[in-house]
Length: 498
Ligand code: ADP
Image: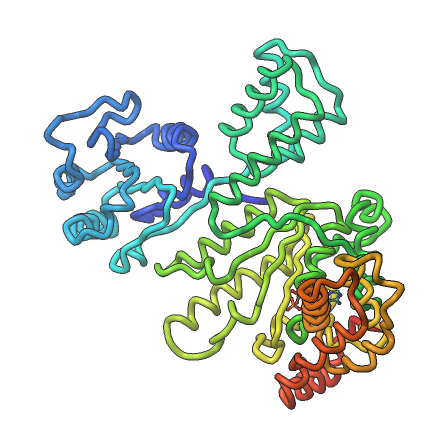
């Protein structure tokens, strides 16, 4: 069972944790939570707009206390601090100032010496001065469950006396609303009703737009538009067959689980660059008929201690909230570079990695993870153990039959009418050691050559010329490519190709 935010905050307060940092956009909801938890205590609030205010009414206490330092000065004595909850809002641009840090430290010390008080920072941004790190606990807001959302919709319908909706539509809305806050859900319901006075299937579009906004706001995940399908991938038939089987389970998870089949967890696709790893991630989402979220590992790594882990948690809960979805972790090895090494940076990655592994292992939500990596040798062995991913595939350079399909796919995209006239097997023979991206490149160049020469169609020779002018991946990577392939074979990862 997931422990809710309210329960957590209440436990931390009872246990004497000095500073709780709640990362949230929902001031109102957090306020009412604090009100309930802090019944027996005096709650004061400092916010940027009004300074020190009375918590319930938000009326300024004293006009002279608009400065945060002055407000904190009131609570630097044991007696003044006793039985208080100090709520600080929008202080992320102040919190690093030495005069604020110094005051918060005094308060922390008093609490650690047994004064019954708590500082609760509510902010949309995580910004923690290093001096305070070990006293601060970061908490994220909960996402509503499907049942909670259903109740919320029903409540809304009753309250505004709107026409009732069918159970199946209610279910669809509840799934679509997953991941949005109560406030956002109510706003969208209001919007959906104002256009035609009822909640219909077409209002689902509104929700989708809102989710995209939410993902953009998070800054860590990116929603990738789905343009590619399995048919856009040349070769990789083993991988495709495996994915089709998982798709069947994923799309019929109710029946599958009743039958005794597990929820698909995810797949790790490793292999040489330009051979269809990203393409596969996109095609998987299309095959599973769910949105594709790309996790940007670079953006996830924050500059404050604790921030990277908080970002990871946020990305995971966002993906879970938006599930069913495909969560694509691109260039996985980049995130885990330095694991096990000495120094602070390595510590962060080790912790980050621990969170990720635990989540992957225990995950039951329909968020299918597709991790892609160029260099599996840089990945820690724990990640490659059974039970983390459902399967590990490697992608090597395309074989002749695969190169033929890749040529066909890219020629068909650009020059469907020239396809029959081009001698593809001749091109296939000349492109041993070429990656999929190399092949796409020579097709592109060949087409451009024909256009530049004012010819009406593209010929085999145009593409051959481009082949001659290209350094294939094999040429560029040389022995390191062979080493990598040997390693994959040795480790007995599944070959994506037949
Ligand atoms: P990576 O393995 O580095 O993620 P990508 O999947 O991004 O490589 O491939 C780059 C481009 O090369 C793709 O967008 C696609 O156009 C082309 N390509 C690579 N492999 C294939 C393939 N097997 N079939 C068709 N096109 C491919």
